[in-house]
Amino acid sequence: MIPVSEALENLFKLAPLMGAEDVPLAQSLGRTLANDVTTNRVQPPFSASAMDGYAVCAAEKGQQFQVIGESAAGNRFNGRVSHGQAVRIFTGAPIPEGANRVVIQEDVLRDGDVITVTEDLGSGTNIRPAGADFSDGFTLPKGRILSPQDIALLAAMNVPNVPVLRKPNVAIISTGDELVMPGETPGPDQIIASNAFGLYALVEQNGGSARMLPIARDNQAALRQAFDMSKGADLVLTIGGASVGDHDLVAPVAMSMGVEMAFHKVAMRPGKPLMSGYFPDGTQQRMLIGLPGNPVSAMVCGTVFVVPVLRAMLGQGDTPAPRFSAQLAHPLPANGPREHYMRASIQNGTISSEFSQDSSLLSVLSDANALLVRAPNDPARLAGENMAYIAL
Image: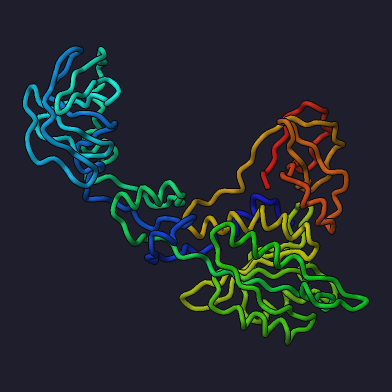
């Protein structure tokens, strides 16, 4: 068995970096910028009023001005403002030539086409200068994961199509004679295939494009067919059959099809029977991660291994899942020789491990919002000690 850190290092070496593609701006949410995006315009493109009021050359309390026109958003005043003159102006409208401040409408009294300043004016001009937001040459850097705010910024930069890294194509293969799909009627010795759906959601949530292949039964022909169907994927996830029992055929079938194995078994719980390698597909590297079949084990390994691999494929760095720290709400006994990822809950700034850590209990995983991480041979811990965790 190898430690989790070594397994991650091996996985990052296998992870292929995705190529670039252009997508419409409206479809770029959550995508990773493949290249720098630079604008050739300024925002705002002209000095604009920040308030409704009157554009003037200079003003003080008691001064009167003749209103000579109006400037509205999308319809500027084309003349020039001289001393003693004012232009009625609205928020977002271009500042007329000659004006250097906007007196807000609450600070004037208007009588026909004459306004009188009724209040002492502060130092603010109520003008947004041209380029106050960004100027020509402003760049959004590659590697950025695009948020709704970034998309608004790109729109203002006049970018209709965005260069992003292609989503990793992830093929998911459940294995086992005991499995049926949700909605089917299981036989007396069968269960519902749940892992594939949880991993499908995890892949989609973290920037991948998942496709679920038919369940592969526990025979070599079925597994070979499933692996053949996974061609074209960047990453293949198998669920179950990764251990060393008589019916655990994933590793031997994969190796018979040319898979170069990187490792098999990791010193962690849950999730020891984990393996990885790659198919020699010529120019395209089809990566393989074999996940354990226990539901919690598969989902924990998805969080610890699959998500960081997806991020590496999307150019976001070769880094493990982020770890945080919280005070332990109760004592814990000493840990064993494997790194332990305990289902836990963060409440009011403290972390509590769930009562049962059985790797088959999805209901416990569903209630958890964190994985409390224990190092191998971690000593007994007291309430109040700081413990590392991964957020779920």
